[in-house]
Image 1: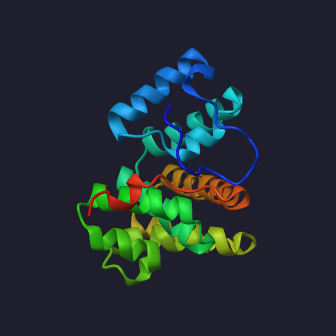
Image 2: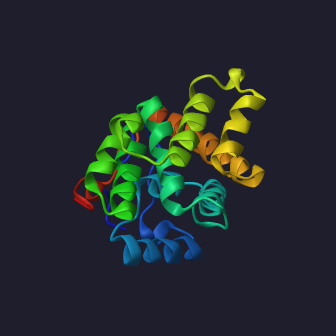
Image 3: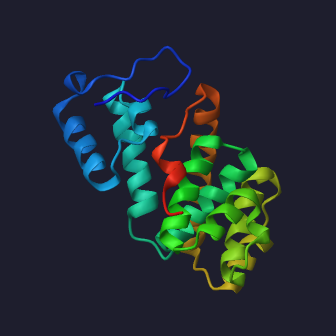
Amino acid sequence: MSQPDYVHALDVPVPSDAELPERTRKYFEICREKLGMVPNVLATYSFDAAKLDAFTAMYNDLMLGESGLTKLEREMIAVAVSSVNKCFYCLTAHGAAVRQLSGDPALGELMVMNYRAADLPPKQKAMLDFATKLTETPQKMEDSDRQALRDAGFTDRDIWDISATAAFYNMTNRMASAIDMMPNREYHAQAR
């Protein structure tokens, strides 16, 4: 693996390809083929195969698995949560995903700055309001918050997926901030 200039601030080494388990090398090759890079978040976790496996299993389930939420909606949740938390890594990476999936570079930028300024359908706004409240004041969640999502057209399973996605990005934001994880440079130019 070509080593990025700067992945994170901790003295935890990012292994070379030769040091990675075979299945991780194969996974990183798929990343290079599909994305043109190995995301630094994966490189960061690669020092411990069990941690990388746990992270990728949760990511793949939440972001790529069966859901009533679209891939774009899940990326929008990642950006709204990361905006609250001011997570540079996730805002850069998932802002690029919103630009790409929506085909609208301005939407990606608005989402990074303030999703409320974007011209979103009421259903998506309700979803992001919920994810933001769960991020900012989780102790204040009430049944009326869940009911607002039902009223907007979400099922209880969708509410689970919205909540799980928001919770996952709150965790990843905190890890990225704690270790000063840097986004891959490629993200900055994508879908512009």
